[in-house]
Image 1 (cartoon, rainbow, N blue to C red):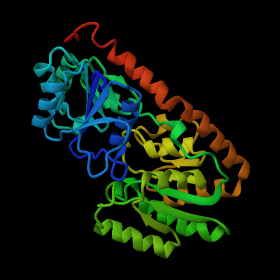
Image 2: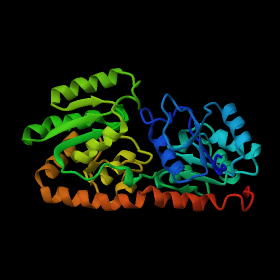
Image 3: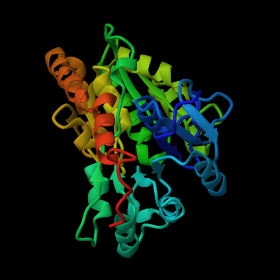
Image 4: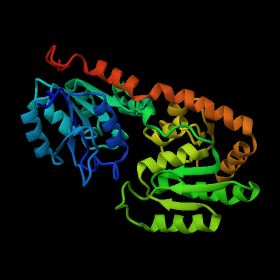
Length: 353
């Protein structure tokens, strides 16, 4: 007999709940779902869903509503779909509906105005932002702010520690705002000065094997080859983590305001020395456990790479600080905080503020 449904997690329409094609939101949802035996995930499962989690194929809003009507969960966690979350508060008044935000709310339909954001705060059980950066953006023009709940990382699922290689790694989407061009330019200058060191790029325009070969990706592939940087493209998530475990240095050179910075967190937990621009939520993820550089500055990144590659003591100290920092993002800790925010489901009907 199936476990009673306590919590339903509703994914964004563009997320695929499978090991091959999951983006950051689907991976976060999986971690929280595994921590809650009474949880079911609603979304798009692709060809190979994550195992160990109850799942219902329900991508469009109407399909989600029909599934929820049958499930009657006590808590509904909606990721990245503010208008749907608000509608669910009227359709399922007995449930505690929470909205998780992973991107800038001021750019999202249904939240662009202060009035709309205020209404969501009033109607929803909680609005949860994955970083204080996003929380502060949401609070623009309001007297109240939503809650901040960082993205989790399950440390027990990471590859075991191994000997570090003289490897400099970039992982992420190969799009302009992630600044892979800055990484390539810095490596082109640094690598000739670092005998025995190599550089690797993993990623594509999107997540999953169907990521398109855009003009930008093609240009970065050619530039990487000229700079002596291996460009491996999109790879399965376990391989990404294995590469992080082997890398001595990981670079997150983002030029945009990162909503959170899951790659930076994975690098910290993997024991790599992290170089970051600290943009958006990146600095609150890594704290003092990263070497920070200004964005769009290949020369500064070159200097940072050379410093860490040539100073074993500095590199080791940064890596140890990163491992310690990552402990506070472990899934069991953040799942317990999420449970507290949800409240004891079923004890009371949600209060519409």
